[in-house]
Length: 202
Image (cartoon, rainbow, N blue to C red; front, side):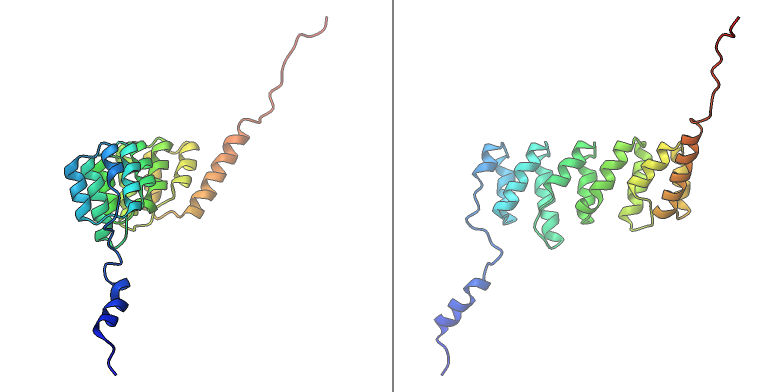
């Protein structure tokens, strides 16, 4: 006996629109000052309540409406929901521009690159050097971690010398050994015994 058609339809209900969010609450976006046109664009993207909460975090980080919408659209294009507001906020706080952040998003590497990207700024490298290092990471080329780059810089290596080592394929292990060696030499140079000469007794 064939199952009734309405039973088949009922069984398929959980499969239909399982990723739709018709009851998402957009009122917090209105209260956060998101423009009505941007909200309509978000509705077309069928954002979830969690993504709305992510947009609110983005607005707290002073990210523009257009970039908020683009970040969510890009995440959907990459096959997942947007959940990187914290990383975006850190990048913005480290002086990365919205176009730069969107570039990270299009490559689906916001979360994976944020730690190194922020640390490279904190290390005090120039913008061109930061750009060169990040481009290597974005292109999956060998590079040094930001931690080892910071150690090498602190031992007195110039940005040019650090880039030379990266281009030559230096690994983190090799960088750690060089940094340790240079730190040991530096520390030893401050431990030389200096005789303090006082007055000779009469």
